[in-house]
Every structure is written in structure tokens, then in C-alpha cells.
Length: 115
Length: 113
Image (cartoon, rainbow over all chains, first blue to last red):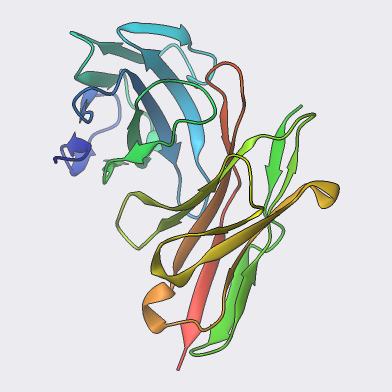
């Protein structure tokens, strides 16, 4: 079956512009996660959804970052007024549900470059 | 606080040599344990996981990992490394309650001929 897909695969934007990153999870997966991976770094947790609800937004770096999920499926991560430090690979993952035993399936990521 | 430690930032091994990547976690109970691999420009792929039972688990691509409760470790091993194994490896811990899923900072593996 289809895996997790993300679009665009690459995005170059000017500082100060807004960007939207999209994630299509595996069908039937109720949990969806966003991570950020900066060059040479590990994974930084940003936010997760259970259904359309985001109980934990503590990982969002600033109020310029927001995310939503509609219909329990597609999710969009929006970064407003982008800064150069936002340059990173943004990874999306989905799983059957939240919690420990449910492995996460990752998309290929969106590489964001802010110039 | 819960944490996952991968002490080795970078490891270089010769093709055909054995490999062990270390992972230690800090958590009060036995968590769910995972190893993921990330090839250049790719997302993360699950190699193997441990939930309970036999402490030696087999994964894809000839990898295995052993859970040692006394050492709070879940080290990844492979008897004979192939050049295609060059990648970034992440250990992860999932907790029994809530959504928490913690990743280590990763170990970069270079394989030399």
C-alpha cells in the first residue's frame, strides 16, 4: 500500500515569506507526527495529532509555527515569516495510534531552505 | 526526564567487519524500543523493534538488537557490514502511556572498502 507522502520535496523561500508543508499519512493511521531535522542533528519533535486533535503542541519552536489536520487525514505545517534558522528537513510520520507500541512510518521529508 | 542516548556520533567500519551501535535509555519501566535507519536523502525506515519476550530481536537487512534491562541498553548489531549499510541510525523509545516517542541523536555509519 501507499506510504506516507510529503509535498513539496524541496522548498526554497525568501526570509519573511510563509510556507506550507503537506503530509499525507497512511490510510487508517489515526496518529500523525511532525519532526524537524537540522543538518547533522537528530529528530526534534514538533507536534502530534490524534485524529484531528493536537493535544501536545509543546514542541513547536515559536508562534510562527502552526499545524492542522483535517478529516483525520492530511496535515499541513505552516511556518509564517520564515527565518533562516527554519532551514531544515521537516519529516512527517504516521502510526495506527499514539503511544509506545505503535511504530511510526516516515515520509521522505520536505527540505526547506530559507534564503 | 526520559532520554535516549547514542554515545557514538560517528562510526567507521570496514566492509565485512562486525558492527555494534550503542543505545541507552532512561526510563522507569521497560519501554518499547526501536531502531530506525535513514539513508541519505531518505526518510526513516524501521529496522526492528522490541516490545516484550525474547530479548534478542531480529530485524531486516541482517540486523539484530539485544535488550538488556540491567544496563538499560538496546544495542544494534550486525555480523558483517555491507557498503550499503552506510547511513544514519536512530534508536527510539516509546512509552507505555501517552504519545511520547523519543529519538536519540543518531549514529552516522561509514563503511570503507
